[in-house]
Image (cartoon, rainbow, N blue to C red; front, side, top):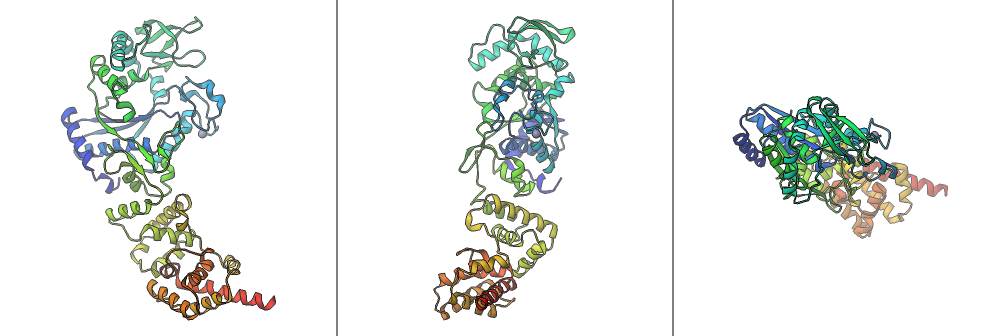
Length: 505
Ligand SMILES: [Zn+2]
């Protein structure tokens, strides 16, 4: 684990101090979880990162910690995720662990959505145990709490009715057996056989069947399961999003069920707010507004991602700006971790010119006076890749560059007039490798005036040959950052080719 990550933010420090008072010295079990019934996005990652911050804070205080990600793989599919074929409607009510992968690349529907998230957790080196609820049920891990729930059916029903304010049917059961068609629930429990871990139930068509709850032949209903799993997992802390913590919501019922039925203390809690993507709205798998952690790991390091997703305080809503505001975030992040060597926008320019050639990037950075930035080449290569990926996927047009190859530059220069070409010719003969950005800039201005060109026409000639467009970043510093030799070579190459073409033509 890196040193940076053990830096404990204030909100986590306060939450942990409270937790140590209310739940003792430990060992602690921090639980997070999600139902993999659609894309698991960075809003969900926020929950894991809140849990990680608390787990780290507990460790810093010397407490033993077990950090768990509970993938709710036995959960029934409620609605099909965007992009999944309509014929999947027939799997509504089936456990996501038992539904085939719509894209046939994983063992199940659940694994299809869980796998990329798990991969992100691995890449972020999060010290977490990922468990799958269908396996826990099949292994009998939840048998004791299921029995307990069934034995207290009346009390659980009463709590559910009182807290949710809804009329709960007379024949309600905390346990949902799986029918022969594979659906969870929708049946009536006739009898509970606690010694055999079984319930006898009758389905909608009047058929009687039995389900063994120590073998995963059903599951607890969500609200009961929440309280039951706290007890089974010995949870002492769990963060929740605001969708669960509203009045009469799932945590309200689970809290009472834990105390009055399962006789288990309610775990410590942190309520995190949602994340929205600027210009797109609140993140939501069912609406298809998602951003996967893996997408963000293409444009920043795991630690930068931690910083971004947690924000100053995860109890506050976060408006993710991945476009115009992103370079500033990166610069602030680098500065706060003592590594601001090159401004992000500059790396963006260089990464697009170098196109994966680290040697060329090093040359440009040295020309620009960024000596320190080239000392760790591996790190530099990584940062260039982040900057390049950002430019490809998120940057606005002015930041998207692409230095032309010589042949492309010759093609682009066909649109220039005689004066512009003479201007470039003279500039090329006067450029020197030792010049800085300002010197080049004033050279470009002086020579424009001498050739009777308006600055706009002169600079358009420069940008056309270098970038294939009429405007671009401030020309002097840009030429220096690409390497003066390179601009010189492009200008002279274009002149030579155009003149040769002229002779032939
Ligand atoms: Zn798949």
